[in-house]
Structures are given as C-alpha cells and as structure tokens.
Image 1 (tube, one colour):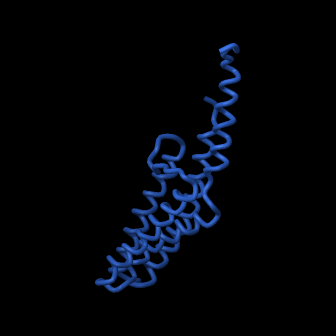
Image 2: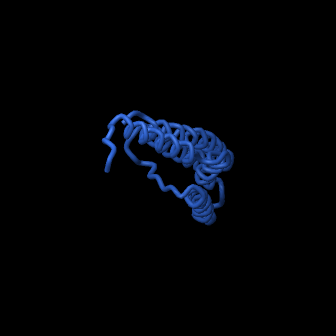
Length: 148
C-alpha cells in the first residue's frame, strides 16, 4: 500500500455510507398507515362476537407481520423494534398505548359499549400506531447518521 491511512477520510467515508443507508432505509409511504390499520384492527377485533375474536386478532396480526415482511423484502433490511437507541422510547410508548387501548376496549366491551367501544379504541390506537411507526422510522434514520 503506497498511501497513508487518513482517519479523517475514513470517518468521512463512514458518515457518507451511513447517510446513504439512512436514505435507503426509510419505509414507503403506505407502511405507517398499514401498520396503524393492523394494530387498530387487533383491538377493534374485540367488537366481534366471542367466537370470532381470535380469528380477527390473528388476521390483524398476519396483516401487520405481512407488511413488515414485505418492507423487509423490498428494502433488504431487518430491524428489531426493541433495538437500543432513540427508537426504544417510541416502542415503549406504543406498547403502553396498545395495552391501554386493549384494556379500555375490553372494559367497554363488557360494559356500556360492547361494539362501539372496541372499535373506537381500535381507531384511536390505529392512528397512534401509524404516527408511532413514522416516528420510529425518523428516529432510526437519525440514529444512523449521528456522528461516530
């Protein structure tokens, strides 16, 4: 090797590579609404008759996992939602919202609003999950381009 190793040049190259990866790694515009729909449908499934609830939840989960697998195939990437970094906070808030929506929907189902309660909780969670999906994506991409 005739050239000298330049650490500044290597760091600049690494930063450029991370920026290119972050630009490529974004989810398509349809992903966040589709993810929200799947999450909301899981909770809204509580509005179904008792014997149909498991099927509704399974179909909603298949939809959500299918979207992720489609994005994974298109992008060639695979990322854990529980990874370390600023995305973990978004994931935690989504899990709290999921549990809260499910608990409220279950309470309304057995009480004053057996059909509309779970549907409204599902819609609220779906909107929040769509926002959280987009926020998670932005946080992940920001983490990628941070200084080494």
